[in-house]
Image (spheres, rainbow, N blue to C red):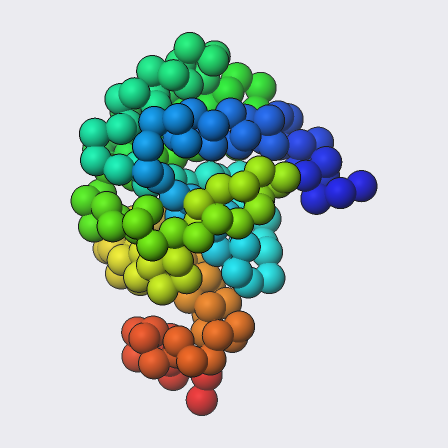
Length: 173
């Protein structure tokens, strides 16, 4: 069984959902994949049911409307717009954090579940993970996952270790 087939089986319809989201985002304008799923394209993958995206300024309403028309259920949150296809386990999240606004301009096309998608540059993912890890308002379990993601980057890319927070750099000594 291929990775896309396995993910489709586990998620309910995650590969199909992911493809629909990527097509909607592509039609709207500049965007890229961020977060753990994006990081999986650079380092040893770990299981995740979240697909996090950043859209160019002003595109979120258009994309959300398009996804609603395809059957996705959407929800507004203080820092994100979320979408979920009923029956699917794949959670789609569009960040509203302006710190990520330049990420699409530095993204690289990569294959994910048989779909070509712009993925944030590794250095941008590193920065995003540092922002998430250092956010005291995030749940501890999420922050610990972010910490693990920073460690994964440091293991695979030793040249980037100097960019990691001192607390994590210390782990490599």
